[in-house]
Image (cartoon, rainbow, N blue to C red; front, side, top):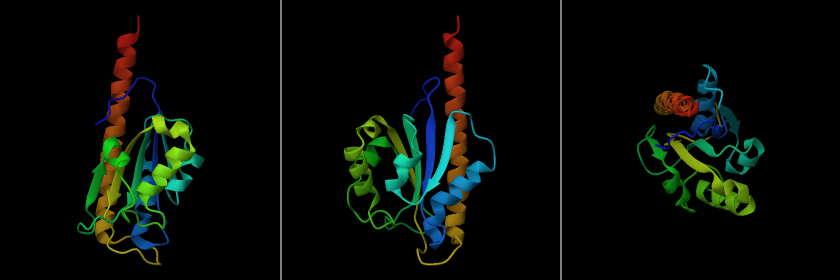
Length: 171
């Protein structure tokens, strides 16, 4: 886990299309996160795909991403990739989008040098189906609940650690 730095901001962004069944995983997690207050240092956004990240990124040094991913695991399997694993993603047909996640992220890092300093994490859920139609499969609904709970816990813990660091710096 990445330790909090006092006063550091965090962006949590969900990718996907809720009109394409389980591809709506990222949006569903964001919706769940928005139902309860998050620490003030946390911003939450939902966008269609990785190429829309610059539209919601406001210089946060840390970005936690959420997306439906196809890695050959059983539907609903939750994948958590730390920064180093995210940086190693390459064109593998990994994402459910036309431009795979790894290629899209590498393109963005090349085009926007400010994003190169960002620390990334990725929560991905293995979809049961990606086709026209609203509604997540029961396996992905369970993954939404697990991912939202874990993200909320880590964001709260991160904020508490930042507050502790700030109070220890007080005269």
